[in-house]
Length: 321
Ligand SMILES: NC(=O)c1ccc[n+]([C@@H]2O[C@H](COP(=O)([O-])OP(=O)(O)OC[C@H]3O[C@@H](n4cnc5c(N)ncnc54)[C@H](OP(=O)(O)O)[C@@H]3O)[C@@H](O)[C@H]2O)c1
Image (cartoon, rainbow, N blue to C red; front, top):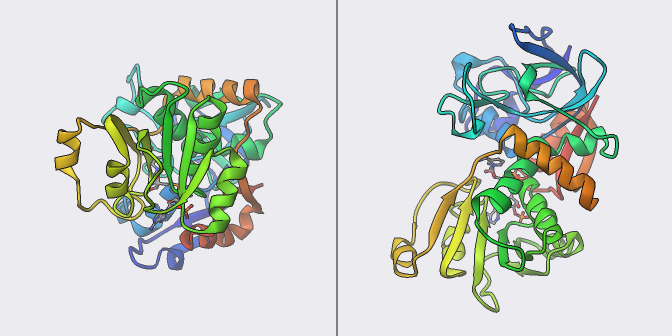
């Protein structure tokens, strides 16, 4: 079957090891099922996988991709929950120390078919297209959990989103504004800031700009390049929720500001199956839909990876089958 995959890691030149071609049909363990993929979306995670981050060479070849929407063996339209918990785990899947994401241990979603545990299948409502539904399981679920589960912020709060155009950033802007937060955004270009305003952001600023006032919360996906600004932008007692560090994990940690102004630093990762279902219901009820940058046939996956690597994104990149 057609798939986008990696056979050897390339920390410095990830696109050089991206392969789009034939891979064997998925193996289906007991309790698992096969989903015929109609749409799959790209995440920064897939670039990290090409670099070998979280995916050692001994687990390759590995089909990339965490996110998919498609049709199950009974013909039902479904969304795949990407968090694979260990056998016998109950409760919050994101707290399982042995969990993995699709494409880390088990073959991923950028393929014609993917095998997943039966419990990882969630019904797709007809109102959402396959392309829209395929955006939800990683970037959008992560944004949902950051805003509504981990931040402790209530509607009416002012929230700064670092980065305007990324998959998680656009989800934070759309979900946050739909839920009644005042959403401020930083973006690296005029064009990206204008796009963020069109998505529902209240105000957009240049990366690192001094804000008109300090904010209640910051949503961080960028890491080293914006961390200092995030900490300095918070009101005393504010919260920064971090789910990623695209630009690096390094200092400065700003520890003096964190303790002196009594800030909270909260980690967040993915979301539970139940939260994915709630996110889907929120999309239904509010009419909010993922911002899709471009839809490409899977055979043209390289174009999508190039756009993400170069930062030429305006929402989610979706591959269709
Ligand atoms: N923990 C989890 O469960 C989880 C889940 C999903 C994602 N993540 C992580 O979250 C991060 C974002 O993922 P994604 O899929 O949204 O990636 P993406 O679509 O490639 O978005 C990248 C974002 O980073 C911003 N950015 C990049 N370099 C920057 C710089 N030098 N200065 C300021 N902003 C910069 C971009 O801002 P502009 O708009 O200004 O270009 C853009 O908003 C990744 O590190 C990913 O691994 C973690």
